[in-house]
Length: 109
Image (cartoon, rainbow, N blue to C red; front, side, top):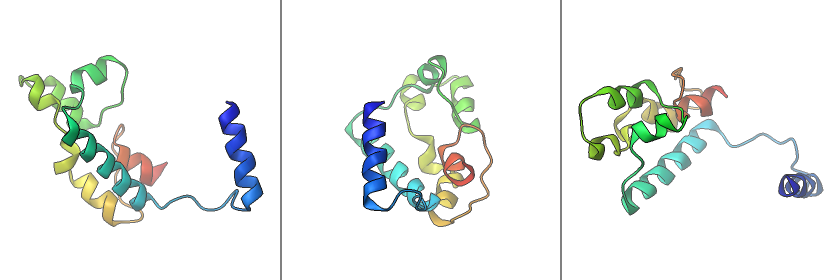
């Protein structure tokens, strides 16, 4: 909490407080890059484990948790082949409305 107050004071001092935030398509590109780097350094969490821990999954990730596939498949990043990622990275106001989809949250949040 103390860090949040300090960062707010810093933003107020710079004169940028209240300025427009990063565009949704930039947030989408940054998110994709982070997840891709995480996947290159090792396996991601099994989507069933994410779901069991209360994590939000999109409709496609949720479908993977229900399929009779191994943990290796459920640890892949389905966003790499999802059209929501493509739209999210290229359009400022992408028409993505799936609950649990990070790209949807960037564009509709």
